[in-house]
Image (cartoon, rainbow, N blue to C red; front, top):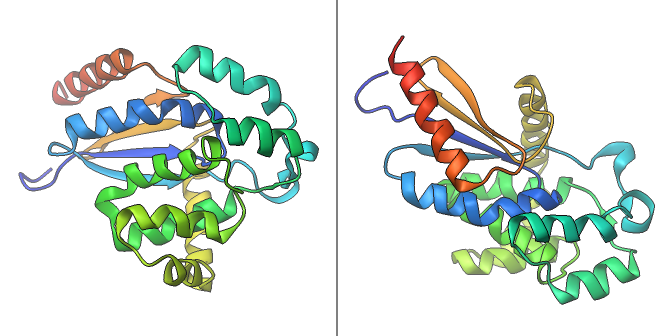
Length: 218
């Protein structure tokens, strides 16, 4: 690895993953601490695609109980709009694809803010209770990043972005990522999983330190 080449941290998440929402504060803290040492890239996992897509009542009724477990474990709270509107009505279409399109497009415009954008998407869905499959949800999110909402929504429908997302899903699968959130640390030719599922900050730092020692001992 050249002196100018930083290690890379791949954050593999899914916008519809409740545990990723619970992990948001950890990845933001980790990114803020290490952003000058590492390059960060955010990939979407495609957790809810194909036959798994449908209304929340049809394909994700388990969330009505599971979100409480996420709150108790992580300390992150789900918003009243999500609980009282999105979950109660249960009619919002549940698909990972729109949020993945938004992330892929955002990476082409402001890649250095991808970690923050991932957290912003999840706040919109799980705190503000915005529909996860509507383009306007992501137009709303990009306002915080000084991007034009209408232009962003139009670009989300570009076939090139849609192809990019399908390749992204294949890449994540080829890495052997089975669950979310996951984090992969890559230094030179060495890559290690440093988080598999929700991981407390202390454990994340300890794993990173152990992996770095192992790489540099080779």
